Image 1 (cartoon, rainbow, N blue to C red):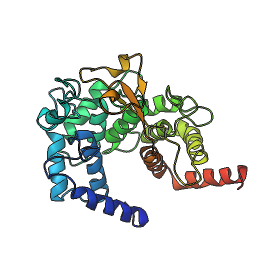
Image 2: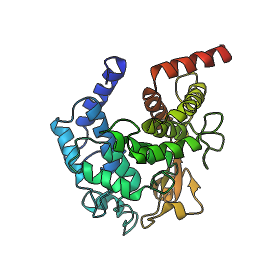
Image 3: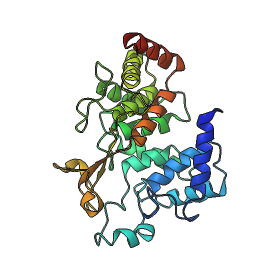
Image 4: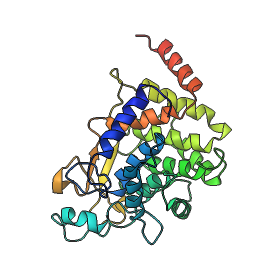
Length: 304
């Protein structure tokens, strides 16, 4: 990570996070909920970006995530010994939440210093869909796990050097429309969140034939930025039931429920933080020349 205000903010965030929670609890999405391997993986991604992977707090985090490795080679979101006291207040069994989840596995597989890193890469190859994408448990948008899986599988080889990444890029490129947007069930007019991860998947494959697709996606993201700097919320997270192993099979999802009612619901990133961070991360992976030229073209087409 280069020097500048972005790094300063990242360092401040890491310092805040390293002091949060108990040293062996991992991290969770809120102070009152149990730690989970998904959130902890993302905190550790920050640590690795800052070169802080040897920090004792990060080392505890690696051990926490590795403990979630299941027999099938994937990573679960929760473990009973950490989560049961909290979850059992709602329902007596949470088998599905204690099973391995593809989207959590893709996030953890991006951790280069995780002790079970190679096993996770093997699991990613096992669960890849025939069309080149990866499934997700917590997210209805497959662009998210597909991008993370493709990046993890190409981290130690030249971009596009693995057939899995090229297949993922082909799938993701087909998801990007003529106007550069990915349209989803929950965002039929266009999802900045899904577009950002589709762009990342295309970049991981680095196929020459996708250059125009990259420019279209970048143009859509640049043009759809709000005046104050964010992107309109479009990251929908789903909350399957405690025994629901295949959320894709559910025909009806409620919207925006809270508490116990959130089970069987999809919840939007209302403050746009996750959506905006996802777009910024995608644009950061794109050539500076591409982003600059697209932004200049957009400025000429839409003068202030």
